[in-house]
Figure 1 (tube, rainbow, N blue to C red):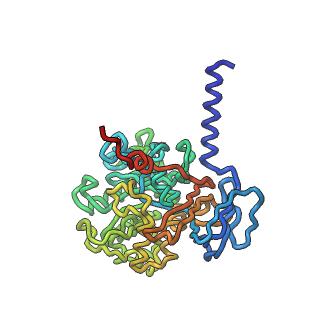
Figure 2 (figure 1 turned 90 degrees about the vertical axis):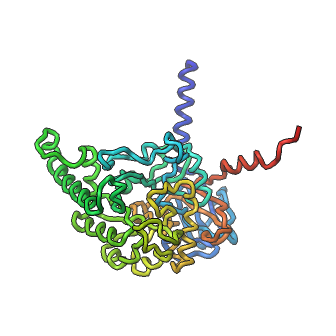
Length: 428
């Protein structure tokens, strides 16, 4: 074999090995002795989570640990599913002041970028991935930025390896906003809503008569064919539309749009969602919101309340807590702090069990991936975190973080810098 062929074979083997390593942990792992919070069922005192080849095979108080299994002693610790952050473009934004490292926004067609698949720009070597994972966040729903229709959100696991191995679901939702006409380049909120109605009407026409469009047999539609085609699953009810809206009246408009076009609506931001909680509950519209904002940031958030999440849950609304309640904020650099949103929500009246659900199983259900992540149950991906204590307390640390059965222990960049510079250089 020539040197070139030998190097190609070695390279191919390395790539295949990396792909395999990113999807499964080829070993048996038993997490034993801790208080296990499956989320999908009651807590288990001194429980065991048994993992094989990257998936959970058993959870319970009397699970037999096979010989040769790697054992993690969680005695006195708390064991939960890995947390899910639904508002962070981890892997797409590295340095927000450097445009070359920002890949979460497409130019689009007059504010419409429905065909933008942001997952295609994922950087698997991003320093934000291990940084986020170290905080117990094992999965992220990457949400694009934009003007009117931003593009396609994608759910990923924070594994290692080539980018395709990260994907849990893509697209996971289409993303749009009705919170700001100015952001959309329009003159008024009514114009923005009208633009969306016209767009959805054209998507319906395009879906019925794509051949007529191709031969010029239709009137000029409001977006390019690739954008209309990307919106067909939304208007047909197969893919949800995540709409960022804060003002109560905007949220009501989003609910009406959903009824009018048969679209599955998810509200993002939702600063004043508590004001229309009964309508949200009746329409079965979930809300992605944070709990750290304690003051209005704009005229659209004058009704901001820090107990928003608690009030919504009390009304029967499905709540997903996210560390990025403001769509303008990429939410990348503090993505690992979503547990702080959950802890704050508890402090302002949200039941603890609801808060844990809101950062694990609830986002998995909302984005259609609960068969893979979000709970500790047989058959689910082994995204598991062992905490030193209550995960919503500031002093608690994620001591063991497993994603698809592999434990990640590598030092973060901040650890390496601390090690490098903690000793002053000698004086000359």
